[in-house]
Amino acid sequence: MIIQSGAKQGKSTQQIILKEPDWADFFVGKNPTSKLAVEFKTHINDLNKKNFVKKCMTCSKTAERCTGYQGNTTDLYFWCNTCDPYSQGANKGKLSILISYEDVIRFAKQNSQSSRGAQRDLIGIWATGKGMPKPLTASAISIFLP
Ligand SMILES: [Zn+2]
Image (cartoon, rainbow, N blue to C red; front, side):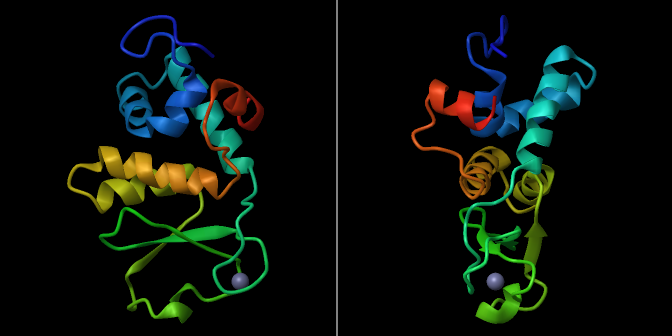
């Protein structure tokens, strides 16, 4: 849906969800029952339902989850459901298992002082793990997230 008014006029709701997740999160918090918020939540559900396409860090299976490392908001690591995310030397207790869009937003907020960039970077990495195309043109978005 193309946003018709306000600060994001002319942008699509899909584009906001993928590139400006911090703004969508802020907006939904302020206007949880608005038409725009419902649209954002629909896109988030659609993204959550998509399978990962990335391979597991340590085997050839397709990933089913990823991990964030405490205090690091520039990388996520992808894993199948069998391999142990701690097998690569992470210190005990430092990893957060992230599966959904909401998991990634929560992790970005908890692990960054100013989480706007962290939310954008990490949602980008997470969505790329689900096959988000680059460059993220309007037509590429319309195929990936109709
Ligand atoms: Zn694996």
